[in-house]
Image 1: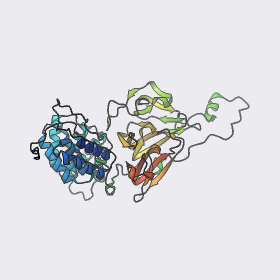
Image 2: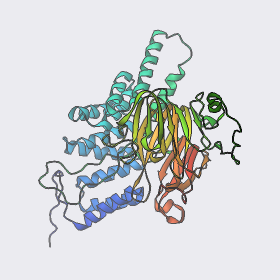
Image 3: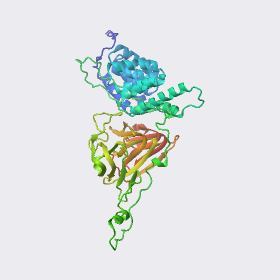
Image 4: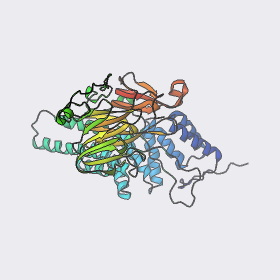
Length: 481
């Protein structure tokens, strides 16, 4: 029997996916890649490609493996070939541009990204990477415009600072001291890779049944940046963790004995000033002994409707507009979830918030700090704070929704009654259950642990590295799981 001639033609858009062995290894490799078992995934994908070397989906997955392993030149070689074979496909160009950015080639990344955004202006991820390319090239004005189109308003504002700093240095070249804001914004721009990691670029694979009448070469997959290198952890905000941002301090407790009733009549004004149920309005927020919280609203504010007891306002308060997950999430879904969305509150001076059953409300002031909080634990916050939506794999087949808050302003946390703060040091780290994770502050990187790295080889654990503070609840009492 003579060996059939091998296919020497260029890969067709669909590929002749007929071998069951090829499909088995391909989808097994995809599953392992989802579980961060990169080396095991590499072996399976290479087995699949040994059966059909020119299959573009297998090549795409292998490029993702090389990217996760930091083998960027190998990933670049594959993506360049895919971009050449399928010039109308935009996703390989985006992935190729990302590899160029990781290897210090912003000019080459810019060329491909400009082609992508011209062909399909709705590609927000391409606009974000284009902003990074312009920032690396020193064109801060174009970087600001690109970040603005991508929906990263906070990065756009930081680029404006760079533009102002550059113009100021051009006008005053004799200045011997560099602008500290310039260094800070550049450091934040370098951390934009980690910031984009939190956005939704979830791994997916094309359907096992290709549509032969389709003109597209299947479903291309935009690569995730993967877990960052621990040696290159960069703070999104420069301010370290301080007491001003800690909510692990004891709140005022109710009196152990009831107050004695007043034996004689008091003037109404004197009674209201003496009664301990009257809120003081001299602070940004104050907590009553029963857990009710009074919040002073300065500008626009976001809160959950089921927490509100009362509004103190100039006119009829407006609290009807949902806040979309426009920063890093699906803008068609509201921030806070469909069941308990966060609403934009206007024309209000004060809001009285009451905790839910088995929950406590804790007000936290951020002062030029960064705070990552579980979405369901976010009760209210100042809209002056920059906010992004992100996700963390739970290891149980779903994801944990997170909200990244940055800047200066008030945040109200809706927490389980039993919670604690755990300090994380740079050379130690910690491992905790995904069901108990509330959030973190500081230079922290969290990732879902695969089974072979978890205690007792169990799923549902998160690894924490970096330096900062992690907030967690008892997994036996929390309602997260």
